[in-house]
Amino acid sequence: MRRVVVVSNRVIDLRKAPQAGGVAVALADVVRLHNSLWFGWNGEITSDATAGVATREGRLATVPLSESDHEGYYLGYANSVLWPVFHNRLDLAQFEAGFYDRYVAVNRRLAGLLQPMLRADDVIWVHDYHLIPFATELRKLGVQNPIGFYLHIPCPPWQTFMAIPEHQDLARALAAYDLVGLQTKADVANLIDYMANGVFGRIVPDGRIRLFDRLVSVASFPIGIDVTDFSKVKRAGGLVQGRPSVSRIIGVDRLDYTKGLPQKFKAFGRFLEKYPQYQRQVVLTQIAAPTRASVEAYSDIRQQLESLAGSINGRFGELDWVPIHYIHRSTPRRRLAGIYRSSRIGMVTPLRDGMNLVAKEYVAAQDAEDPGVLVLSQFAGAAEELTEALIINPYNVEETADGIRSALEMPLAERRTRHEALMAAVRKHDVASWCQAFLSQLERVRSDDDPLSWHSPESIRTALAKLEQGTLPRLRSSSRALEAVRPGGRAQ
Image 1 (tube, one colour):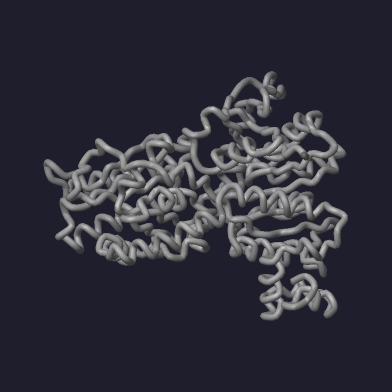
Image 2: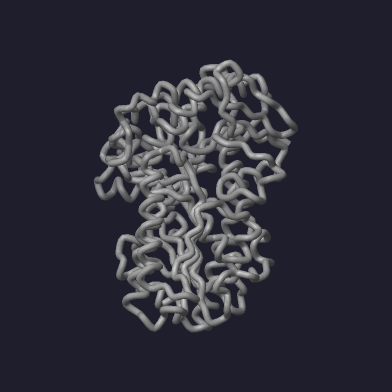
């Protein structure tokens, strides 16, 4: 069996994976399920002299970052340029800071440390925006293995992407991969738009994109969770204001400006004001794990949340009832599962998100006989799958406040019907199927079989629709090529 080499910005101890969350848990599952090697940063910041040494322990191979690398590559380009741009926050991007050279240099150094560990038959799976140039650097070292890339965050509209001064360099780096995976069909459409309008890419008859001198396949692979981790939990006991007469709303997010936390607090305050009969009957528990505290935008959001929570609690709170429990620290996943099950509403309202696995975790943790209700932002990637949630616009405070009331008043029969449909979606795209789908596609991309047998259906259908609307002029192909991707054609 071919070894899967997983490359990510962070590598965690597999024994501690159950305490982690999100992407780290998904990648740990991939490593456990396959003959594999997991390579990346170990989270340590050290001197320049020791940052160039990799440590190998079992399935893990890790390296530290130097202070200058952490500043320029991680806090700088990855999180002060790419993160805000990919989440449509151009106003927060620090384009002028000169971080790009360090970003590329770190990718080059990491690729150089991994290359001696590679085997000729390895399949390499690179993860997320920190490592876009990684395949280019491996190719320069002579690596010919199949290399796939998966973007865990959203792909922005093409005009937004083009605001990055180095966007063409990033596109050339993406072209070094054999397969680029994204969370949603909307993300696929955005990336194809960019490839068309930004760097003159075009669809070839087998459905791939010709980009510079290479062919790359693009498709959506919705990430999921291990459903069994959440489906057998018990309700959490000993919660503050946990009496049966009080309904709990749970929110679990990293402290990040993309998560819509101020909007959530404002909407809850408006709900209490608009529907006073629910005062003393509902509590919002918001767990906001700290992240990137040294980046200015994150300290701003923390101050804003603390101010809002204090204001709302001051206006509506009583001696025996505090409306908002704001917790600024991490909570173990096993503890969260019980809290999910005990909560009448799961409130997942990001302003922009790649997928948002909290939404899926909340659904999986519910009691099917008496399930809670998922209130979900239309801008979360999960909304493309979890259509039976209460979908709201987080920018609309009134709509969100009304959504909270609808969730609290939803009849049991409707809650059961919605939960059954949501669980079916969560099970369909669990972490195992996500992994299998991506790796199988990557294998087919590099196989000797007829390339028309491994088309990317979302890419083809989306691009064809745009072609016929005339919105992607640079992706126009010959009439013969278009016939190959029309419904009923060979590529379909």
